[in-house]
Length: 124
Image (cartoon, rainbow, N blue to C red; front, side, top):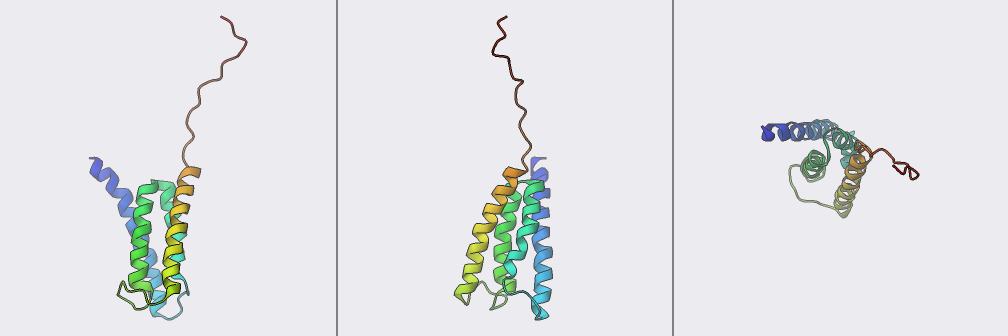
């Protein structure tokens, strides 16, 4: 049962990354794509982190890195990185997205219940 419970968030993270990759890949082939497409993964992965937590979002980050390198950066359909700028994009995306995931999870974590305060002057 626990396997299915963990599979849904992972599946959502992979579906989000796949949808963003398909959209960016379409624009890349139409030659109107952005110069640094990997950063378009940040907002969807932050939403995944808010809804499902850090583990599915981290899975999405590493999948986004692989998909961006394979589908969006030249040479296409290869994990070879042809320029330092593209390598820098991927490195900075990794650092920024890991920080964004951690911050989103911490900011939207439910508050713990605090015990009721006792009076200092109660001498029962």
